[in-house]
Image (cartoon, rainbow, N blue to C red; front, top):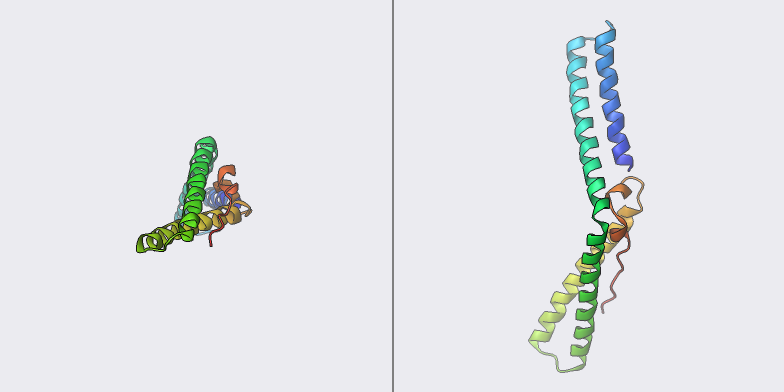
Length: 141
């Protein structure tokens, strides 16, 4: 959320620069005008992009929650399947399945850690919805 406020501040800084160009004679109008225009463009693009991303993340929460729940349950079932396979004879196929599932669980846990860490950050919390923040870690040994 603070990222959006930083872009709003940049936009206001550019607008103040343009106001100074129009109402004072103390500055070099050409240079200040160009710099202010560039700052306004950067601020506008930043505010627009962060607003669109924030709104889109918060309007699709039920769909995102359903997808995350499905992926979580699938990974839990695969982990349970691999634990059952470990009790039986070990084959190359078992090792390959174990490795593939371990990689997928690792990716899930990375996403969960990122969502929980950045979702609680004052700088980035607006870009993560409640579905992302509710991701649970999967234990896999």
